[in-house]
Every structure is written in C-alpha cells, then in structure tokens.
Image (cartoon, rainbow, N blue to C red; front, side, top):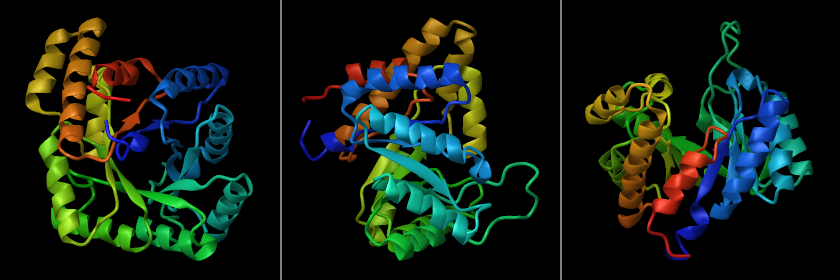
Length: 282
C-alpha cells in the first residue's frame, strides 16, 4: 500500500450509553489501533442528543492516542450553541470535525435551528474558527434519501465542498460502481477533495436492512437472499460478510479510492477481520 493511501484509514464510533458501553468502546478502540487510523470519528445524536457523550468519547479516544473528530450537526442548534461547542473543542486541542446537517429527534417539532443545511454549517465553522479545523462532510453515492434526484444531491455536496470542506466520507454502499460514478461526477463539477468510502461490516441481517432502509443504502438482492438463507446462523453471516466487504474494499483500493472509513458500531471483530484479509503492504 502506498504512503499516499495508508494515512487515510479511519474509524467511526458512537458515544456509549452506560459503563458497559464505555468498556466496550475502549476495548474495541484498543484492538483497532493496529490499523493505525489517521483519525477516529464520534457520532452526534439527532438534534445534539448525545452532545456530552460525544465530547466524553472524543476525550477517551484521544487519551488512547487517536486523533478524534467529533460529529457536529446544525439541526436543532443555535449559532451560539455551535459557537460554544466549537470553542470547547478548540480549547481541548481538537483539530478535526465532521460537519453534518443532522436530523431532528422526535418531539422537537419544527425547531430546526438557525442553520438548515450542512454547507451553512461548514461556512459557519470557517467564519468562526478559520483554518483551525479540518472539516469532513458527508457524501451519498446512492443519493441522500431526502434528495429530489441525483443531480440535486450532487449539487448539495458540491456546495459543502465550496463552503470549505477538506474531505468527505460517504454513506456506506455495497456497489463500488456507485462510488466511482459519484466521484467522477463530483470531479466533473470541480471537486478535488478526497472522497473516502464509508464501509459497513455485515454482521447482522435484520440490523443491516433496518440501517439501510433509514439511510437509503441499497443492499443488493443477491446479498439479501444469501443473508436470509443463513437465518440465525451468526457464524455463517459473519464469514459471508467478511468475504463480501473485503472484496468491496479491495476493489475500491485497487481502483484509486483514497482510503476507507469503517463504521465499527463499537465492535472490533468484523472490521479487523476485513482488515486482515485485505492485500495491504505496510
């Protein structure tokens, strides 16, 4: 693996909800330090519902020796809320954030906050903090589920990059052609920042279909049929998942993807199994 690719591997975690979750997060993170990730990211609940948990998890992961990038969403937040959060992270020495529009949690009604879109959040971060933060944004190779059409969705992505984003992480997918088509179309629009594919390990049939329905990721029919055939056989599902995801990752890397961003779900086993199967040279 070339030096230009190796630094771009990254991992995503979510804030633990209890002590057992905290222990699982630390255990998984320690195992995956073998990947030598360039950074790890920590998710942010709908409407900022895990704001304190995100900050705590960022501190925990930084204490383990990882550069940590908190997710930050603008929906449901005022400019002053966002200003305070950014200042707190800056005071802690955090240098990277993942800027997202985010979703309103149930019960918040129409209080969408002062900034409505991710490009506005990126602009706000730049206005408030200059070049202090390396800003990652989201990309949707198979289209955001709320977008009008693929062209409109691509325009939204281009606007985020023009607002000052340094790089992008994609929603997960299982069709490499969708990723490369999106990258080609983005580059044709003048985008020249790295677009890193997001990778979802396959470990649970029901969970995967539920996540995919929510985020608009397509699970190809042949994968769904194979998973259904395995039933409750977790070992077979995991082995099949490692094979499928490893082949996807290898295809992406062999054809120029700048790295991989693993959605770990706070478990190390599946991402590490894929990592060990990849044909990577240190």
